[in-house]
Length: 241
Image 1: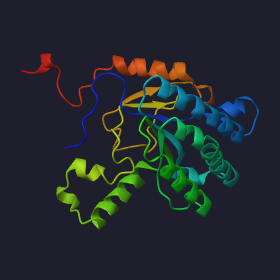
Image 2 (image 1 turned 120 degrees about the horizontal axis):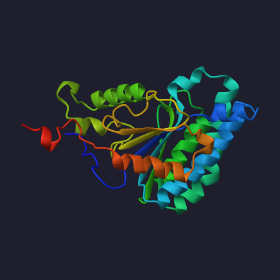
Image 3 (image 1 turned 30 degrees about the vertical axis):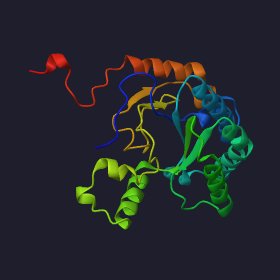
């Protein structure tokens, strides 16, 4: 069986589609890169705030497999921002007992970026207070294909494989499935994000652009989550004949 969902209390795993950096910059007559830079500041603010209010697992959608179609200069800027964030914040994250995991394919990433990913994951792998996952060069369909390939290589027959066993081959192996997905900027799409893990997640869409997103917006989304009736495909007791 698949891992059990959380029925009450703080969402066990919150995932955020960080959208609106470009629109935020355009509204200020600045280049898109300026919006991405401000977005990194929001990442710091949200990671720290989420940990303080009791969130234990947070996944941020940073760069998708589809983002390779963007202008090369913007892609290079996004890669540099990941480098800068990890290099500047690694010591702080480690001191706060945060385990960092980079989700996604390693295909197409430079040798120095791969080395940086290995360093951050190795440095923080024994930390236990908070799980921060950055989905970079990530796509949900790609993850499922990679997981299936890994499972097959390990000798598993996918036709009779249990869900819990298959989950061990996902990028998020060992983490709880997603309870709450938040998307900023008013868009209402999942955009190939955590397709397996968010199968029974609640979704909250906000018009706030990512650079403007703060702890109060996160708390509002969590409050809305608490108002939801999560049945996971089951009937209400009153509906059972």
